[in-house]
Image (cartoon, rainbow, N blue to C red; front, side, top):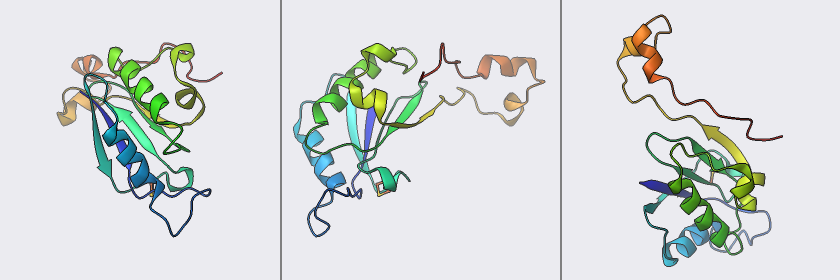
Length: 145
Ligand code: FES
């Protein structure tokens, strides 16, 4: 299951500070849209990307997760949903660069490797030969040029 996580408390510099929070508007817009198969939506209050609102993340168990910023609650919904569908279709979460919607190429804040499948303390020690099986997949190439 791929999850789009939306910060509902995000603000944008181009939005009326007395109006509804753009993050809440983005979440509402995504809630009304048909989500791609295998994709779900959740709301959180703050992804610690407050200076880049609206902020969202896309992730799934066993895959790389991504945090994006400067998402517009009206003009970026279609790209976000397209990106989530493409992400869901990957095995490791890494959409080929040229196949990413523009906001997923230009507005990425962070990418986070998948967690190991097992979490015994001794599994994380580099000298443990069994720990090699637990390393997250390595990127095939640089994310940016
Ligand atoms: S308020 Fe949205 S990331 Fe902090």
